[in-house]
Length: 257
Ligand SMILES: [Zn+2]
Image (cartoon, rainbow, N blue to C red; front, side, top):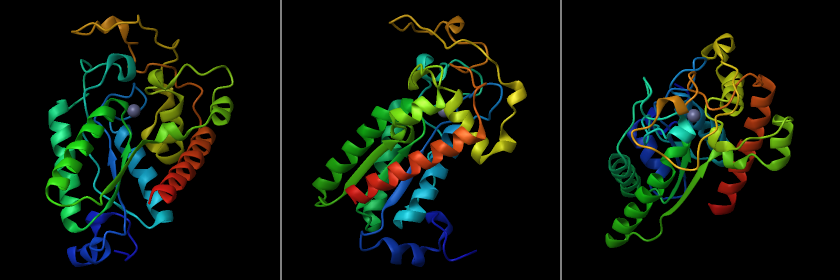
């Protein structure tokens, strides 16, 4: 193994300890899900993408990447097709919050004082915030008050100019991007062997009424499981997205850390 890995868990403990003990090296924690992503992509898209963003960012800013969270909060029908779909395997909110709180406190015990949670699954968002809040509160009770945590979702770094380039026919919004142009393009740029565009289903963007129903009505979700068509996805669009998001996240971490 090369000495230059950015993956924390690949290090023997004395090397990890030497890097993190003084608190100067940030830890990036990718957070994903196991969730269906249409007929043309695997179910760990939301893990693969934040891990790769974290790896690229860590290389530039001198951070370490923690093992990812590979399960996330339940898929919502209007942003991920719904938690009723086969394959999608989710945690209860309280489980995710507790696991995040525990991991943050463990890194704090090692000496880490800068953490960035790199989210790849929209539905995790508020549970991540709760995990951070509980961890910081308990750390304060324990006398640790110099911990700083950044939380971000990579798609928030895609600016308006990039959206106009990627969606020349109009952008329907991040909420119905699930399995669409954004994720499929990134997967084509990074893991083309895991994408089968021949199986991608071209359909109109999903449209939902302004309310939710539980249990969900399966007929609201397009049969493929995607919420917008991936047909316009391309490797080139994926490379544009990679550049924009990596440089945006690097800038954010240089500002905050
Ligand atoms: Zn996804």
